[in-house]
Image (cartoon, rainbow, N blue to C red; front, top):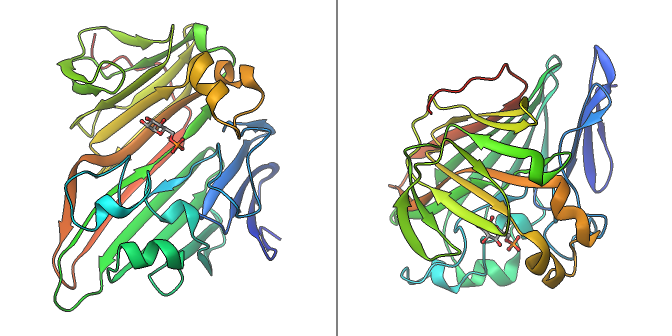
Length: 296
Ligand SMILES: O=P(O)(O)OC[C@H]1O[C@H](O)[C@H](O)[C@@H](O)[C@@H]1O
């Protein structure tokens, strides 16, 4: 069986290789494991809560309707960091294709975390589609404004924790020339470095990165992850390094920051706005590719 559902999760296995699979928790519709031919591709904290008591520390948490904390919007500003999708239990809508195995999950205000829904009383519908290829993982989102009168304002982001061998041997490419907001320095500038390298906590929001730029994670010269984005112009790169990791109770082992890098595809620099009845779609595709320096 390529799709297996339990009370708490859904597991897709590729029909051509039983060692290629993806595990998706209904809580947050969080992909928390993606194995490609037996090799895990995503980082997951050994202290991550998979019981619905807290958003998952690792995998691909979904960030909606706000990235970080919003300070300006009357309703979004009431929500906790990164919104409510990652702390709500989604409905499993079933399988939509056998090969590549593809499933859907749905969320709307009637299902979402009730405490948070009180703070952000909007009408919306989310459909997440997860497609497991023999060599890729595609996560596709459709957001619809189901209100008959109110506009829907939101951010979206796939908060992807990629597994790596050693952060100090890791580079992230093809962000050169993009404007960014550096959350550590709390200032904006244009990145003139040929690649991003990591020597301390790094938390950057790259803005309006052209869609044809493939973001690659490079380990000692070899590309180990390639991220393709559609309708997701902003790219957040994050590594918590030593001190921030110590401060996160669900981040274990404490040396785990060496084996992860977040490359997060989103629409977070500005809010999207849908009029009643409108929908918006986007996707992130994770796969392996040749080294492809598009900008130096
Ligand atoms: O601890 P969380 O709420 O999951 O956030 C984890 C991280 O998410 C993003 O990468 C932000 O840019 C970081 O500033 C934040 O620390």
